[in-house]
Amino acid sequence: MQEVLGYFTQISQIPHCSFDTIKLKQFLEQFAKEAGFKVISDKAGNIHCIKGEPKICLQAHYDMVCMGEAPKIELFEEEGFLKAKNSSLGADNGIGLAMILAAMREFKNLECLLTNDEEVGLLGANAFEGKLVANKLLNLDHEIDDEVVIGCAGGVDIEAILPFTREKMRGKLYELEAVGFKGGHSGMDIINNVKSSIKELVAFIFKNDGVIVEFEGGERINSIPKHAKALVCFENEPLQSEHIKCKFINEAEFLACAQSQNLLYAINAFSQGVRAFDKHLNIVQTSINLSLLKMKENTIQIELFARSNTLEGLRNLEFETKTFFEGFGFKTSSSNFYAPWEGQENDFTEAVLEELKKEFKTAQILAVHAGLECGVLEKKQTLKCASIGPNIFNPHSVDERLDLASTVKIYKVVQALCARFQ
Image (cartoon, rainbow, N blue to C red; front, side, top):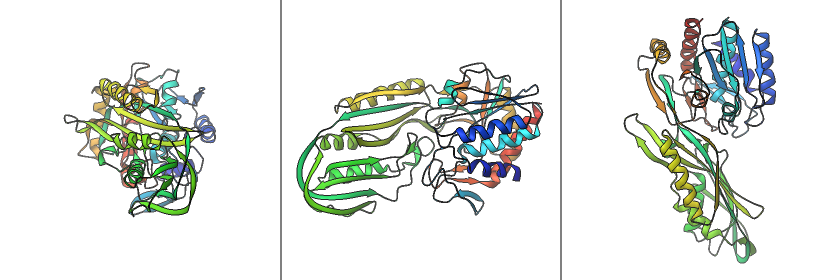
């Protein structure tokens, strides 16, 4: 276990935010070569490693969602958890990656696929053109330790753009900031009705008859917004709010957004969060997250991330969301569409469940409302896929924490499966 945590510590000290992973890529390539692997890298930054005659492939992604002070990561342990001071931890998916590095040193016959830019739309997996040698793939990107995942949500990025003009108005200018919001993973945490800083700040402006001068909110396409700030003109002093910090700037004439009212109506009317629930699987089936809202160069830009565990649900949500914003005058587009992974139980998933039950009596097979690369990779060739991982709480946020006892048990399962398929 110390070996795994040692590798995770090394990984955490190498910057690897999405779209800025080159230093970690170079480290991983060199590590794999020194461990005796043939290494093939592609244009998307994926690293494909082969040693011996592998019957199983371990897979993880090596980019992370950088929040707070990340990529500067200062690790500390507290009450059985590994955390980071004032930043996201990167356990998603750094701990899976660390387990793979430990397995690389231990096993003679092994295949590993380390994919790039998963957190920004499964870009690496979608661009992977190689062919895996093994027909069994174990993904290490799950975040609940007693579950074997054989299905996941598909997703699509949606963008809504509205040009805006400015008009003169006189009033009291305030600097507003949303404070005390938790944020979180837009798939795994969406069921908890986590409040959106963007939605709450817009509602505050609307209820106090404000006119937007500037607005910026959200952090990442797949994170529930934690931060938002705005410059807003009011005729009267706004009411006090626990979660909206108001700082008076001055009273004068300003150039405000002429489309402010239209924007406020659109965001207030938009339904954030869960849209459908699957009672059979006991998971969220369809959801949408309004991730980012920015005003720049006379353009209002909104980015959303839609998810569904059914293809029909995802297509419908994409259509409904684009139609909604077009009704308010926005021009819309979508990108990075990937279909859900609707896997089936097989001899490999049974083997994974058998090993997991040795550590967790409550282990079960299910699907999750989050994106996993299995769903993309299994469409490229015939594969038997499953996903497991240790308990990671509040990923994609500065409150992210890794359960260390859980990590010990999951690595035992990884070792057992690697040994089983030598």
